Length: 333
Image 1 (spheres, rainbow, N blue to C red):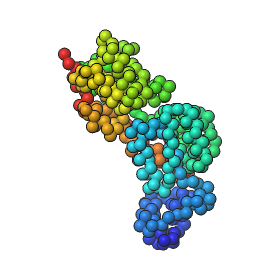
Image 2 (cartoon, helix red, strand yellow):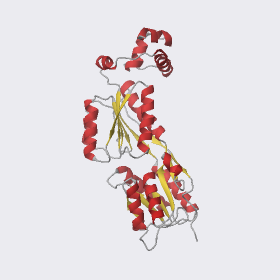
Image 3 (spheres, rainbow, N blue to C red):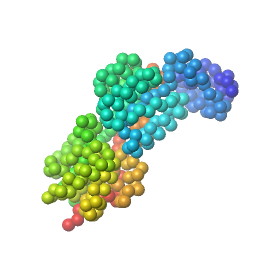
Image 4 (cartoon, one colour):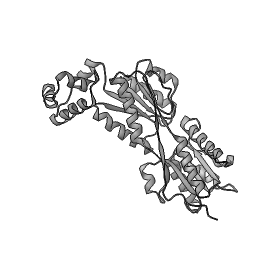
């Protein structure tokens, strides 16, 4: 099957098929859909090497994530990769493991492969690395950490709304001693979540003991260790809000290890709503953050800059919502 037969099936010119396959010029959404459907039915496989030489585009997007072991990120990768395939793009995935030196390696890989754009779904990014990418005209989209500019977009998570919803829920259950376990404080997203928690308490005129604010590492063991220390306090919290679900699950493990129960003795709330959270004993109350929406907005930003000639980046806000399950309950008398 060749390009002429694809064009005939789609009812368009061979030039239009070429524009869709190579991304050399904008094509209407309906036309692109027809062409891609014809390609799929016909079994036509473009020569990607020749396409790269002819267009100067690799048709690869970089996707940099923080922790491949955290179920939040594989779910995000799955959504991003699905959309990319639908648009004839490949995805180069890199994992930083929250380490700055790993980020340098990731960026170097992106430059070596001459990616058409990079989605940086991490909590931190060295400005020098950002300059390395932007200096080569590579579009970027960040998760919370970017400054919008030419071919640079940013996706903002509405942490404040989600944490407010969680605090409202806990106070409706008569909780007043509410603790928070953050991620590493050197990460911007962890600082944003902690500040959102403190601001929510202030708005509700609730006091928070410094002993109730603990630093974790966004993983099970960090939540476990933080909760073990809080259980040693003379006055313990009756509820704990975690910066992500892995931390919350670690917190629940520490509560059970101490011979206490969730939620009868301590209520626990997570953040992210990863798939496993609804299967925990008990199912975890958490703040749902849509990976599909993040992936769609990230891809759309890159595709608009690299294939549709959109030069100015933009800010996208992703809403969150509280999902109430069985890990929260009223304070016991």
